[in-house]
View (cartoon, rainbow, N blue to C red):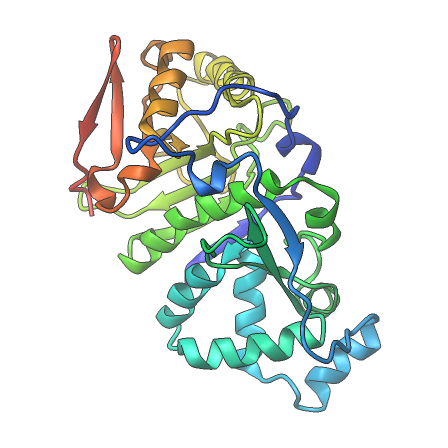
Length: 321
């Protein structure tokens, strides 16, 4: 398993003002599911719900053998991801030799005990489109892992109830990078919202991936442009903060990661959003390299990246891993 670290996740920092705005469509003229303004979330009620609600009850599950080491591993993976889809978790757990069928069976028990939550996301309750369900740590799982490992790396379950759906969707989008890098055995480390320059005055990236390549390791600072929010202001604030740090130090420094080639990657659901971001922010004028990764192009992950140059976004092919 790769190393994953989580700084204290600031819900207010992730939550931008919800705005009424135009929708950026896919090449097929559709609004992407994960960016749809009518998308809603709710907990999928488990059968025979008997949640663990206190620390003694959580520890009882381990001491009495109800949970074994594999189960703790699954819960830890759910916690590390913060919020990921059922499919993403299955893919990551397969790398740890935990089968999809075993995970699915145990997830039912976790939900019954309140160790994990399975969310239902729909545009309409009668909609036939049923995306892979988001999974987050439940109250019982939070209590258990906080006793076993400490709570500093954990996101409280109520964060997902208190925030709108975009809080959840940003983690899902960036977790796809984490899963793909892990599947290709190039993910050295992953951090959620790490500090830069050992100074909290600089804006934190949502995620940082340290990736192994044949030409040396690369650090990717990852940000998601979420249509439900004012993503232009969100990105501009972060890029300008990092520009100040870069001009002062001559590089971008991520706490806990060795200094090496660093690239900012903005993740956008559609090519139309990517062009809008570049045309508005002029990405090629910043002193550090910025790439745009486009979700609708990710059928081929290696060719889903674009480099801004002048008024254009030029597709590149990643042959680094």
